[in-house]
Length: 123
Ligand SMILES: [Zn+2]
Image 1: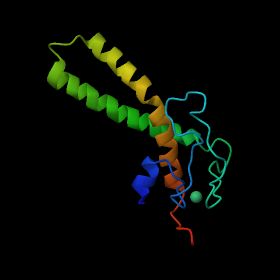
Image 2: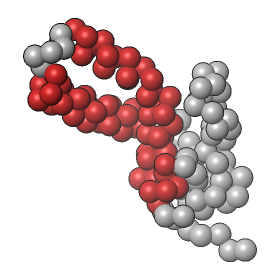
Image 3: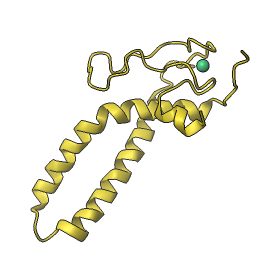
Image 4: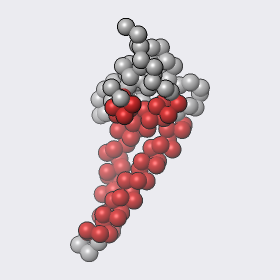
């Protein structure tokens, strides 16, 4: 498993085997943010200091801004004349709400990958 695959699959950044989140479902709002404190395979402590995951908010914001710019360009190029801008804005707000669970977890996974190197476990 390479770094990108481990990030997308929400695996431990050090061993690429342990899970980051306790629940795999994106639709369980209560358990959405429940992370393991340590990797079950290599023992890596995920939250290395309190407030560590605040940085993941920047990752999430950057991804959301990229989506917004792409959607806005697509709107002006393809739908500008036919679709009212208010419908566009509310559609985008709906899209943002829908992708929030995915973005929340993915941004934490990316943030962890930035600060941890891959060290395969000996078996
Ligand atoms: Zn691990």
